[in-house]
Length: 202
Image 1 (cartoon, rainbow, N blue to C red):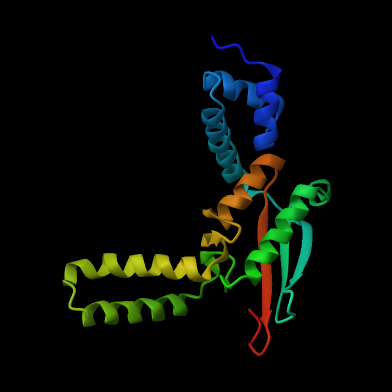
Image 2 (cartoon, rainbow, N blue to C red):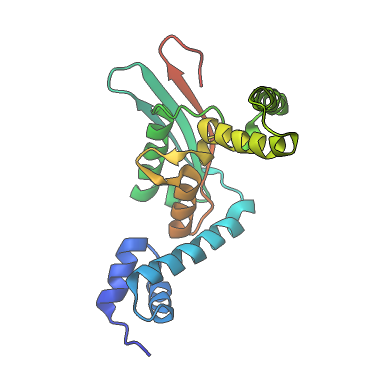
């Protein structure tokens, strides 16, 4: 069995924010491979984040962001389960990052897919079907192509589905799940409003 030194455990803990014993077990399981151990912790962390999805998150912060030229402003409510977590630097950074993302050109309209009105989805679906038929695609391929276009629509308009503005290798949902895994609580965005000079809110 690979000998796991305290220095390796500390390095993994610094990199992931996971507990010391979790880091030690992950390193043992990964045969001392730091990268593999990080992946194991991420997998376990994300799994536990999903288990927390049903828990109440009614603490947190309301964060604001005003663009440097004062033409875009955002208010966002980011929730967790306890005021202890809400007051940590990590959670405050997360709230600021989410506000920054909403203010960016990504400009989401909804927090998650459930918030997209059915009539909006039906409208988009009809448009996509008409476009695909206009292109002369075979009938049996139309549903699959339309679903692909709807996925793109979600990525363009739904906050949690969008690539995170500061690291587009992960979505905003994955960012929340990672913080949730680190703090051991459900972390969620409840609502936001985005103002752009000369436009309606959101």
